[in-house]
Image (tube, rainbow, N blue to C red; front, top):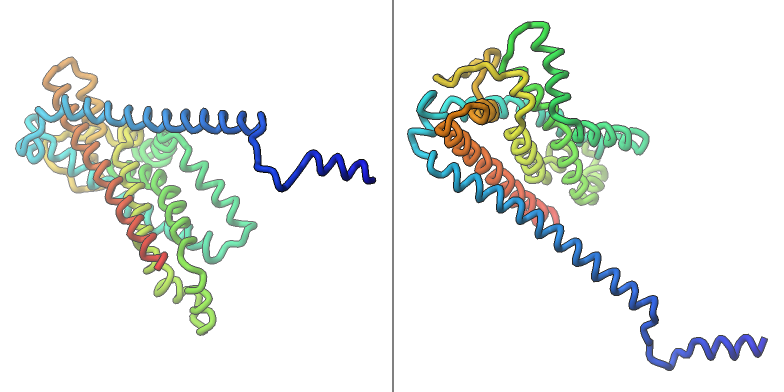
Length: 298
């Protein structure tokens, strides 16, 4: 036993300074390599975004004018912009209540038995290709009625928005301090009343953020509107959601297929407007999310 103790004391002396071994040096080297690769990947992603934005701005800026934005076909794209706004607005009106209710169910009512399956379904829906959703709505609505419509495209976009709103709202509701729920329960407040008067007001900023992110995603989707609402003419504004509504993604696709240099310029201009709207929504959502987190952390 004394021999073993002497060997242990020889191997480790707490009074001696720590010295890096070969294994520690290897770990530091691997850590630096991984850090370099992570930074390189982030820089590459930012570089791609900058290149895309620069290409769109350089090609599309020459097409932007007040007449281009406000008039209809063939000199402008006003009806297409209004149509896209209308379709996305209807989709959001459908998706937002459903997404918020799903998030409330997951955070306030569902146990672990239900939470994981529902989250799995939402994640699968979020990963579905938009063309599959478009085909589903086409078979469900367009094929039986033999008529394309803006409401059908809005329903397809709503299916895309629901998982984004539900998952984003769920994350924000989980950030609401638990002592607010406990205080409401201690005072005997009904669960539905505490949700309406305490939890939802505290998380409204995050809910709006999740909604804006879903709107930015839906506004740029091409497959649903291309398959479900692609025959509308852009010479006038169409406000009837049950009829065909002109929209920006379909117009960009149509112009890209034409062998017309002026059409290419118009497509670049529409792309610039669309990407500006998406960037504005993304930045606004981030600002609202940061504000909501600061408010809930007080």
